[in-house]
Length: 528
Image (cartoon, rainbow, N blue to C red; front, side):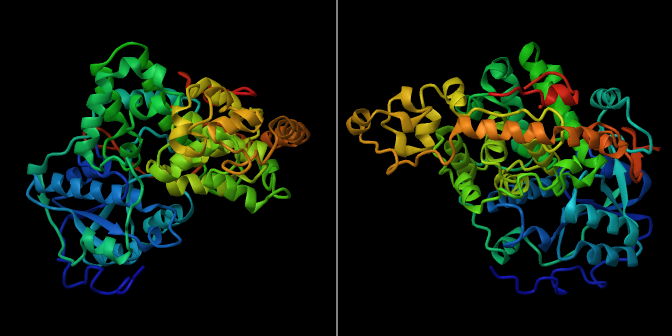
């Protein structure tokens, strides 16, 4: 990887390149890579005469230390090309810069530009960056994503998000403002060359709003079959919406998807899919409430759980699909090769790592986050912690990977596609290959222990161990939940900084169940 010139003057707009602004505003795009139903863009178009759309390629998200695979970066870049095309339709373009966002934004502020961005729930570096941008560069973060940000417990959160879903989308008039741009030598090709972006994943959807809208249309036309396509990974690949990468990068707003489906679909499929959109807002609200989801156990009693049993070799076997459990191995190989995995298989793999292998949750959550094209920090980390039991409620969520074969891949299509070592093994032995009679192994040419590993852990014994551990820690976890702050993390209440919010007219104002409650969203029993 080459990073020559990183942060140098030819990658950051120079003071000479930035014209002095009078009532001008930089619209700092980060994740909302669209011009429709965009709260910050709507706010800026109402308050300022001149707008300069900007995207900053931040070195923190690239390179060997970045938690993003090349395929997700390529999806981002394709979405930026699409966004640039949206601005070109209005006679302008998207400006690019590369370097420390705070340094870049400071140069615009020095030239008299105001800066706005849409508020996004995040953690780690992104949370620190946004707080610094607000403090040091006076960036205005505009609310408008259906989330609640105030000092009071949000007992009415579900009512608020329901109202947001049905409100008019944000609108701005390109004819009422001037659109500006700044010249830099930064191009997407140059960024990809600098960081040697060479995606190897297959079957990755194209990025951008145009592709997202086409996918939305096709899915809505076939939404009647959606309920039967959720759990089995083969069915889910073609039968679910596959819109999550587009929502993660904001190529479409969640509200635009909701309103399109609401206007063009009916029946149980529509109801189930709409429940997933509430999931999306629910888990984004959780990260907005508490940015620690990405690094700390929600329930402090669960901090360090499984630290004593951490075994990097077991974690590596899980990552590489060498566990001896075909459904787990097929899922992990599919994830690494395509950047996709349906929700039930994600939950099963998280449960397998944390419950049956008794490994810490964070290495697994980071692995998912690196490989998933749709890796949304709010959904990935909240869901992984929920499946790992670190919230401290509904902890007995132990998936049986053998049962998942019988329920969701009985003919072995998914397993044989990703675990070719077992291609000739009869269907009836795919849930427990290690128990295949030796004469059957000889007849089909599959040698368990040689061609495919024996299970790295025995299911029944591992299940009993984790149940004992969870039972032992349950009193401490329940006691921790008595702390109002801990209870807020696990619920839907919030304490935090306020941001400016814009209404639809631009005026300032201060995902397998159909319910949006915490208990029902996560209410998987044992032996799922």
